[in-house]
Length: 295
Image (cartoon, rainbow, N blue to C red; front, side):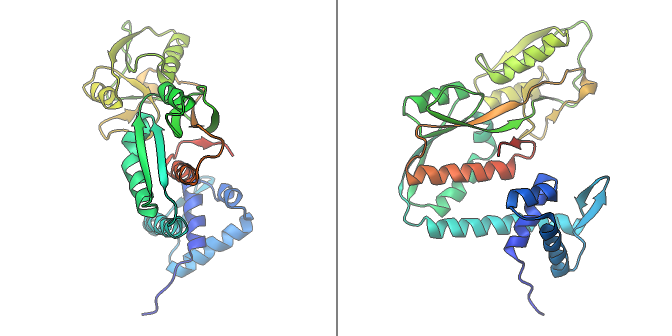
């Protein structure tokens, strides 16, 4: 049987367009014309011998073969990028001090650091997991090289990366009860999520009470799973037992979206720091489906 070698460049276009939900956006992101992207997709369908996309409303959706290929394509691209990074960065050595808010530490920190360690065995990473305001303070003091945090806190060099919608997270059966305050499960102040939630409830004329304070995200989610109330978060990396609550829950929408910032101790750090920064940004763009990134 003749072996078909899939074109990595074409696979990247396919994956990027699928993740962005638009191949027009993929063309812009990859610096190609829409006609060039269309030709690439046609070539890919010819290579695999199956239709990969179907019309759905005004857009496109993956067919069953398309979903299968998408899963494999992401893994192939990840291996490709890891191999290139390992080859180019084989001589990179150093130490990076990284700060992360709990959302990212719990969701994808192990996988991220595992890939980074395989690609750059000479770089050691120290990780601090804490609240955004405290991470920004540590960057400002020179105790951390990089930090990902919600909200615009003072630091030597900070860059707004993305805006991510806030939502209410709870058990699927949660409903606001008339005449009773909404039970909130939150971090202690200062907390961007807490502030936005209270502002939304006040604007909607809904009474509220703090039902549970926790210093950890795992504690918040455990309290929500136990039915003690609802918590304001993003839709990324939720436990399987919890859901994003819709308007039928009686809860108001929260606006504006929360801002994700990258804080850095230096405008341009050591090579090891810059390489980890690149990896962080690549991973965020790939994994945060609901985010609107700043170009």
